[in-house]
Amino acid sequence: MPWFRTVLLLKEEINVDKFYPVALPVLNGNEKKYVMDCLESTWISSNGSYIKRFEEEFAAFCQVKHAIACSNGTTALHLALLAHGAGPGDEIIVPTLTFVATANAVTYCGAKPVFVDSEPETWNIDPKRIEERITPRTKGIVAVHLYGHPADMDPIRQLAQQYGLFVIEDAAEALGAEYKGKRTGGLGDSAIFSLFGNKIITTGEGGVLTTNDDALADRARLLRGQGMDPERRYFHTVVGYNYRMTNIQAAIGCAQLQNAEWHIAQRLRIASHYTKYLRDCSALALPVQQDWAKNVYWLFSVVLREGSEAQRDEVIRRLQLRGIESRPFFYPMHVLPPYEKLQSATEFPVAGRIAAQGINLPSYGTLTEADVRYISSTLVNIVSGL
Image (cartoon, rainbow, N blue to C red; front, side, top):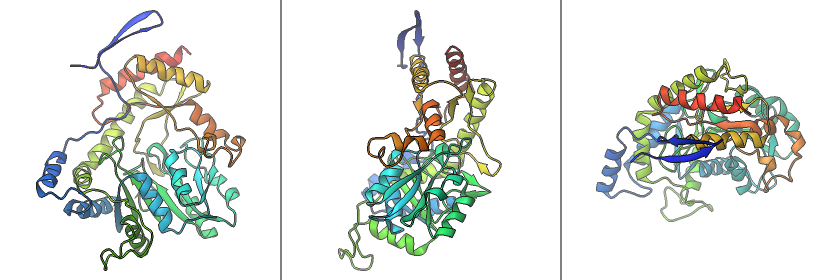
């Protein structure tokens, strides 16, 4: 039975017979077959053949030596930070405009997140603002590839080399994105990905840490598995964590990876349709793709050129009444209660504006051009009337 809602908006009764969520997983490959294989084998926990297979295939996709499957993207980032030696007294530079997990993972280590404003076109961390945040306590930089567009990694890496810092890519939203022809996952000293249900590929919950550093990979694997010595079972050499992925998750991941290029192609197709139908709307700023980048458009996102956060929220409300789910951009870290006292809000004018006026639109692989046309025309009509 179709989703149905009757609403009253501006004294008009509107019947909505189709709902467009922001995200929807597409499980159109061997997911069921591989999961049934797990169930029949009884290997359903953190051992089983699909885990090794998934790690090997994920590493090959990202063109790196190591992929370490984890329970989610946040635990993958925590592991990466710990493997790099982050701890109490350290400072880790992160963008203020990111999902909260980026800052939280730093905090889990006992380190302090130090926020940097956004670059206005890509919405990523502004490399020109990083050096002013570096102190003798700075240990590393987490470069987030926000909404699927890679951060400008060359100047970030140059600063890191100059000051002896590590660089972690937070590629939670950017599987398959490219920087100067090289895929995310191998652009820093390590990288992390999220496989949550709304990501480009999914395992329901899940994450992956990638690196080309053998020693770092060994350290991360040790910490992931309760610190148990790989050569001496139940002998735990360090305080570790249970951050392992299950064989069932990995089985889904193997099936999703087989269609990863298709999933990415659908994001590009959808972005092309949105661009076609929204580019003439002067009220909206659309996402860009720099010449040196391949944007995978995890979510197609727009920014109101004028207006307040309240007006943005009104746009979201009116879209919802027409059967279109949309979401605000992430709140910048510097305005959230756990972090608002670390730095002054006046230091982040670009991120503050983008976050207050940004909207994420439905972006999943089974959207048709007709769907995107309807969503776009509805959005244009709403913003034109603000």
